Length: 262
Image (cartoon, rainbow, N blue to C red; front, side):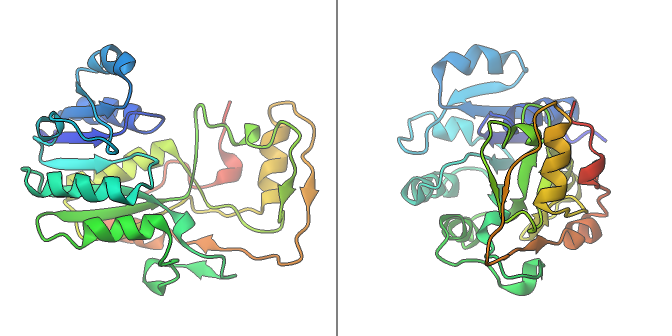
């Protein structure tokens, strides 16, 4: 299916760069941002239109960058003031739809499985404040994607703790998502025009830290990790039931214990 939309992607790192590649292959026109002038030629090779954008000091080119149907915000910044300034620019642009990439870290450990309607968010978490900045605008529609821990390709989870560092609370459960599924879900939001929604996005399975990290660390030839038991044993399991049901999405990597990271 050809999208033929103009999409601006704020952020061109581990997720933003391959996302741009994918959306261009689907027939879209893509504007993409970087904070580094040195990366402009690399981004131009994508057949995307590159921009140097920093939300901490927005420049005159921001409105050109926002000449799109959809804006995907995919940067690690938690600068609330910067996002407020960005919002002001979006509201006077032609942007009609926004996808904001957030994180399941907004949920507290509550020793239960969490769905979006539970209200378990930490309201003072910077990402919740930023989510609400966009959700409360009446100038455009926003869909929030709360991704679990990001894995795949250069983010091999076996290397997260491969330097001899210890892993705390080993009996708690992991909430992770492969980059292929991040891109797949974003694409389905665009194709199906699903707006004004919030989705938790994690793989189907939630092995314990002990099970998962023992397997992935040994798979790359490192010694078995060291674990430190915690007296609290607090955990959370993030449910992906809504994103599967609402988008009819089938995960490409549903079982974390069966992913071949090599």
